[in-house]
Image 1: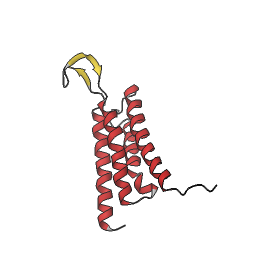
Image 2: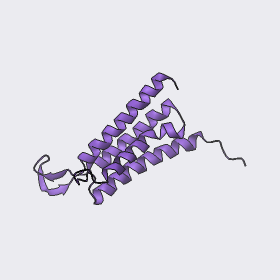
Image 3: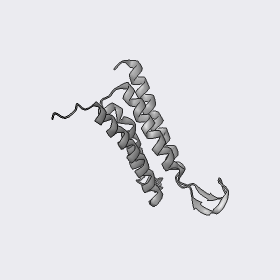
Length: 131
């Protein structure tokens, strides 16, 4: 890989990390009248939908750089690492990833969508089985 490809890959990885942080920070969003209209305080986990849409796109873009598993899956690995780090308490005891169903929904939507995309790419590049 040339320098230009490495720069594109680093850009994709930084974008994956930035999307992870945005998804984690907007995960506790609710219809409580503060940011969204008042609808009884219902949770609005739009972060899971954003993760399910953006991770496959990032993986497809990384695969254009190189079809190797490590390169094509690197946005997914960075995203998972960011979510894992957010699950542990920080220096002040704050935990960014709240421990309820929204965290599982975010992890499930993001990891499942990314894994399906990555698996589909690996399946297309594998040789056919002999008969």
